[in-house]
Length: 150
Image 1 (cartoon, rainbow, N blue to C red):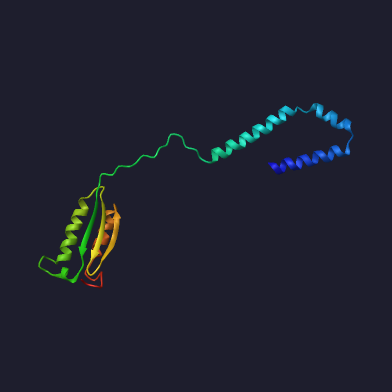
Image 2 (image 1 turned 90 degrees about the vertical axis):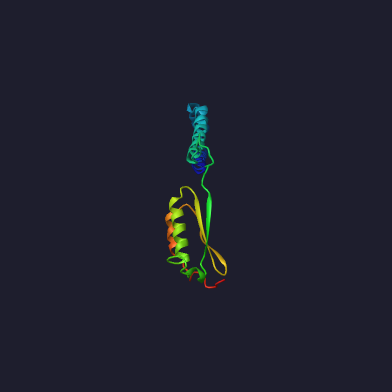
């Protein structure tokens, strides 16, 4: 916009430099300068409104906190080799996995995490509401998961 105005002003000066004063006086009598000023002002206002519209203003939207009624459940599972004992059928680890799986199936809106431990503890699955993922991670737990036994 500025470039267009500059080029036009230079061309006008070049034309009037080569002519006599009568041409300039005759042309300026026919030009309505107040109309030109208003056109420029409206052009600038229009450009500002266009930039404002492009910024994507939103009216009437508010951020509302989402209330969650669920709780966070963290299951700590012993994966030491002692969990292979068959005093409970089929073995301790499989029985624990079965019970946790049954509990996960009943959950709605709660977050679940899995921690495994033997010689040291590790976060196996961070808090999530994706119960299918929790079931997959739970199925992957075995006593060989942590090499250092406690």
